Image (tube, rainbow, N blue to C red; front, side, top):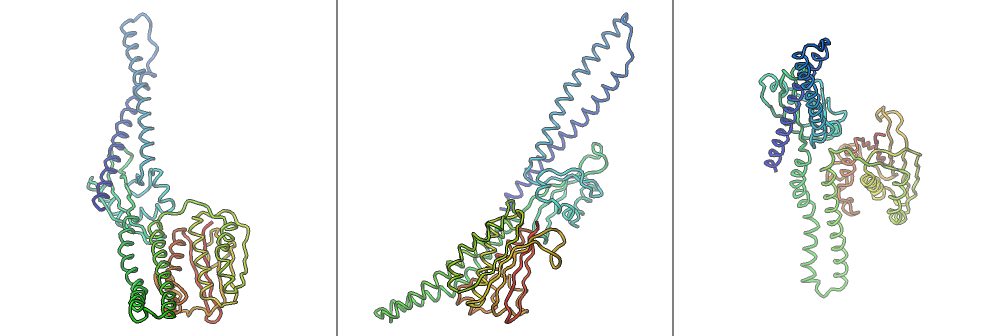
Length: 415
């Protein structure tokens, strides 16, 4: 994987170098032709009785016409160069020696957006730019960004010819390796987490199978009881694997902002329809409050998963016959950011969560009461999935709880 990434970086660098060379040639030819045209335009009108001068003027006019044709061809090359640069799949930025952005292609504008200044201020990248300009040799740097979401970017800095550009400039090619690194970590984490969490139900299944094959071979009531437990353990393993795969998929794309739109007026009722039976079984009263809101940027399927996971938590850990509140409204005041946003809130009136546990609730497999969580079918991954989805949407998750009073989970999303 690393060799392929390095080979791709090399190809992109060669393309960028060829484009820069084409721009240099085009600029030089265009300046010469413009000087020739200005010189021709400034010549005085000559008497017609001088044939030698007429021949020279004719040749000069022919040269100017040829120059115009060549200028048009070079203008086409410049447009082609701009089109190629704009369509490069990786971000390409031109910066001056002081770090000012002179030019950025479409990939850079789309992938970096408001984060471009933070990227250019990274100490390793700043050092690579300075060294490239001082040594006139390309430099490379591996950059890591922890916020707003973790990103790993390989930067290649190439110094430009100071004789062509105004002042010293450098091109920066950015290749995002976040997905590749996430896949590598996901494989290792999946094996470690799956082997740890699946060990207990697998041991139970093996024990029951051995019992059914031996002492309980002819014991009908025991066989029925064991088969029921085995079915429950198998279902738990299935939920665990589904949650692990879901979490892995979300982590892989967490650094990429979602491109869709969310209509909470449709999303919430549709999600509740899939939980009607469980709500009825728990005899829970649901208080629903939905404000009229515009479409919110985001992934509707992932946000439906957030609503499902938060309601699932409220149903599992809230009181049977109790009350669950679900609301979606405009964000107003602290603790939310000052810019426009929407807050999704799910609350219950259960036993609550001790304050010491709240900071760790979104960790993988973290459970306040491990025995109770396993007994009611919890995998310990629901809130971890919620956290990563909220991170991908550049939102915030706030959890508040009081023992004996219930818990409240609030998700803020930028509008």
